[in-house]
Length: 384
Image (cartoon, rainbow, N blue to C red):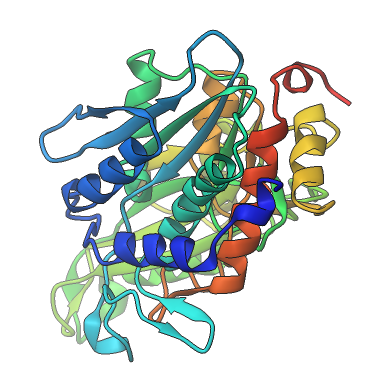
């Protein structure tokens, strides 16, 4: 029996549902509930398992299958999920309910379904009597949803990430992700001069200035050109707050902007693009502070590891992601050839009634089974 033929629909669905049933919302951050089922599954698969906890209550589960003497294939997936507003859901957000071929729940596609598919691939290899030629390492990490500081970033800083190639099973619609945008989160503080609301011209409204800045930034063209997989960068002004009362000219207004960036663009370059558009829109008294920055990343679509994953995925096409994943740490900090491949679609991630098709779980698990059975580490070093 081939490895992919040994994939079981019931097993991968049950594992994904059991992971969804663990509430790991971040913020506030608390991945501990999912550690026990992951630990038990990995031990059942014969893995050496340990817990990495750089901060109290922020555990990541690390596991290895193999003797440590050969090449290494890493699977990196995050175990935290974004918060839920239960009133918006038509099904229990942590129920793991299957209906009409869809598995519902927070984290179903982003990305506990991907983790379950990756583990089912190993289950299938064992059932088929196939020993993977490479060591398989699993990092199921905390804190991806708020930047990775207590998760993959901490693992990299601690020197605990070593691999010849890696897969991040985020939802990719079963395509092979090789590029992703980064993000600059910046807060713009606009200062004006207070005055009486009956004579607004005697003051200087920070809100009026902020409105002009919003018009300059939101959906702006930054002149960066178009990436073949990522399109053109975007900007979204997501929050705005200012003033003290309707009858007072506002002395201050603050807004936050999410400026998406292409690979290789630095933090300073991204910020300069934002302030450049503000300055071109008029004379304003303002400051711009970086709240967070995550760089973009990409892997050459012709890299031999990309070809290998595409082959395992049934000659799937390559794609880019408009959002960011932990793949950036592996690609940029460590130079590990890394692709994003997993079940489900980002269009339903972070939404109410998030789901993943059961058929996607099965297809992804078969891809992982084929990849585990074939990867010997040789091709991961060479560009195609």
